[in-house]
Image (cartoon, rainbow, N blue to C red; front, side, top):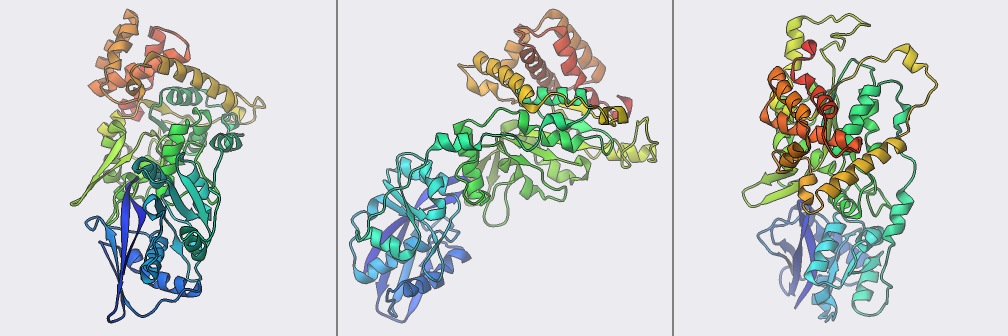
Length: 514
């Protein structure tokens, strides 16, 4: 007695189909799950048998064999409970389910037969549409997420009995639908953090605007209490809203990671991730023992990765970011497979100028020895700093700025300027959208050179020699200068634009010499 059902699994953030074969025969009582399952899949036999009995179905003592194909790929998670249960019951009763070939099943079973939500439904639904499946049975809590993908009937299921009755034609369930545009509209509203909350720091706010307009990386160096963390948290409020394509990709990442809040079908705001400095390299860029999982740099995809107190991070943790920052993706290689994660993020860092935090301050005396200051700054490698476009000094805020009543520019006003600058960039590279990304050594640099005035290029050449900058810094300065010109709505890069871009590279020298 044999039956087959269909499901899917996720590797990285990509899904692939799984065939679940159930075979029942006379013999010594046993329930064997094969096909390279992990412990959570092997334990499904206990949940499946209890759920079937508590749902009113008889489970006689037989020899049950369940195979998850393909057998050479490791399966993990509890989402296979529902297809295993229906496959076992179909093989016992010799049912013929007409719609089984075009239906995928997902859901973790409780012992009473009710269904718990599963992770990774959105990338799975995307894959099923491409594979030609017509419908998907999911727990009710996952129905909104699955229904985002058009071309697939989403059948919300609350219990195992309901699923069986639907599959056998005893019950009709109306497919679930959602209005994606309405979800986007409902998510629009006032940001939790607003740039006008920051008192003073006009120069830092300007640097933040430049970073947002060009998608540039940023590091802030200043004493404790100067507002570095406060400013960084307000960066998402001046970034452009997520497009639908970006939102779907971000939602898929968070869905696989199990980070979608309850009742949320779509991530509509740019992520802001701020891991603690005790994080490991695998947790930051992805990996892990056994199952490969996305790291913080992927969870911040299309958003901001904020590293506070940068020198407190382990050096090996910071160095593994160098390639993902340039390639905008992370490749995790294992013996059996290679997993790719996206990592198109804005890196924002903050740090103190010395261990006590007051080196160079006019308000408080630094208590650190010169050797301690040099050792502290040396914790950040030159190659990593070279990949950060804007280096900004954040001075201590004086009492006059703190007591001012002028609220300053709100985030909405700054965001409008950022949007106009990004529109200019998109129009410039409309035929080659890949050049819009802030990657290194791209042909777009040639076009920026052509748009630069001779005085601007002469200033750049002089600065390269004075600051001993690398070739990578040269290309990044060109990009920053082009961004500054776009904010000024200028077709050419003049000397003022170039001078400001070079100014943001002053921290390539030691902080105490700047």
